[in-house]
Image 1 (cartoon, rainbow, N blue to C red):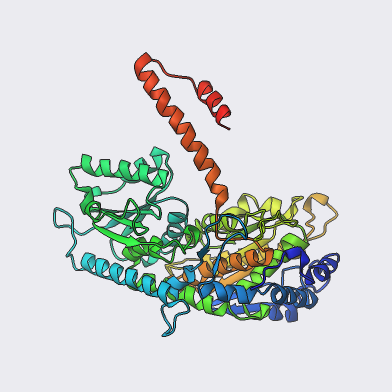
Image 2 (cartoon, rainbow, N blue to C red):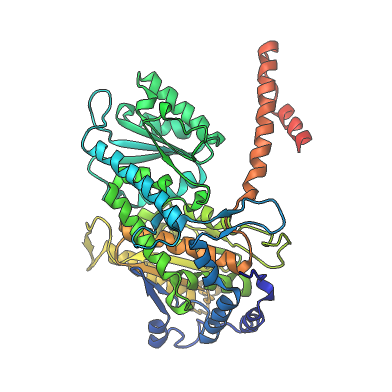
Length: 536
């Protein structure tokens, strides 16, 4: 398998030439009926409407050429089959497989990486048994009452993905079940959650692959003490999701234990036991399996070599066109669904921790832009916040809208002839067209330049299955872009420096605490900062 730097791909020059005169979305009849019908890509229950991107057939053909030159489908297929792709040539690195797709490759008689998929099956069997015991009331609290709440204690990938999915799927929760999350080491985060639940009927799901994550271990101790203060035995309430052999892999301390594996990165782990335990508790085992089915459908569709028939690949290459060729620094993900309120936050980690890299796979400095800044909020709230900049600001921000034809609860009201859901979709479509076409006026304050590229991901309804598909669309888009930029999307060394320095600062704080106990007086913040300056 050959890895090639982005700026040496032959198609790069052709695309650079095309970028000098990109398609003008503000021209007369730019969004013709033919264009709107042609520039649609469909799979796994989603339609990608991309006529409002600044592309034409010549650009798409050149992007297809780039896909082929960079071997993106070959690399993606190799990833799914267990190739070691988490590496930097010639330098110490994690040297691991990348197999989050194996967690959902469960619906074929011939999984692509049998060993990893069998490990996922074993954990799913354990989860099903555990959930059945809860449902049959074989597992109850000390008063014989069923558990009705689960709190997931984790941070980063052990929080963001599962939290986003759990919030998005609340309408599909089993009767009486709820999920809460504690991530921040800020004690107020835990205090707020703990005061709002009945701890006697609550399960605590502690998630840490290494079993040594400082924020998670601190919060675990805080929660354990809260249980003990209520006269509850923590080992009858706490669940562990961790790596085999980690300090948390201790059955005496937990009601149940599930494993996560080092070939699944934290930000890609929502479809593993990292998300499975909490989502299974909330939705039931079948609900979690629906998420996996949707993700697996997209994983299969993502091996289609045609950019026009592969949503994840097309989104990846449109992103590269906007970022590397047209020079736009950021990307806004704008779900027109309140249920997806935390989905952009999950994508921020998944995308920026994956592709926020400045070193190629050969260990040399990149000579081109890699991952964009990704951000977003749900519409229509965002329209009354930052859309002013999207329409008339000096920064052009490519936008990715996400919408659904039907709302989740299917409860709505008709006002002035249309329902709320119709108003929501009308706003989505209007924003997409307005960004693309703009509007000219004699009053400069009321002029809109247009040519703001965007696309729409549209599905029938946000369900466990479509959410699994949506998750995988973005996960695979991120992988394709990383392969095209020839960077390692599967490590996160940039996270480590802050952790190391925080550890040193904490050591000084411990020393200062001891001195304070002796002197009966505190050291100032300034003194701590001076010591930190010496550390750095």
